[in-house]
Length: 162
Image 1 (cartoon, rainbow, N blue to C red):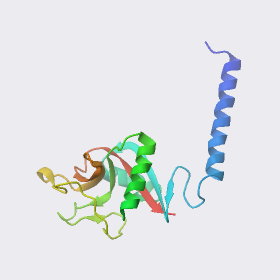
Image 2: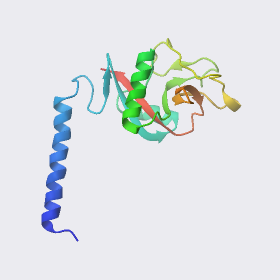
Image 3: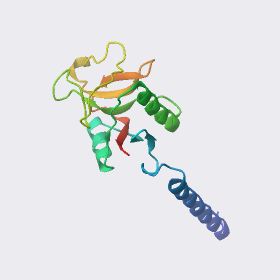
Image 4: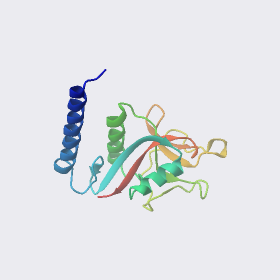
């Protein structure tokens, strides 16, 4: 059983920690990205741990004025992998923002940017059983891209301009 003193101390500690987190966001983060986002050049990235289907992940990103992440270089890919690894301590698979659902073998980024960098795993995309139209990263032994079933739930990465 907790005493009133213990509960008061716990409430005080929670308030101090919340204030410290708020101070960190106000003082330590780059001013152009929201708290909790990672800035890389002119863009902000957010790892979303909650597994969702691809379209739900995109809707979630839109709810924070972003899209599922597009990736335009090896360095950007590695930075996003670092964001995921920092949050999970593993290179977990995650949805990113490309799809060929509109036309098979015509992949495009949901944010409208040019698909100017590719990092597919061996034999990918393969549209296994005609049901794989959404892109995920950190697939296989080499943590590369794979086409996945859009209805399967994975964590995701959102991106927006800084």
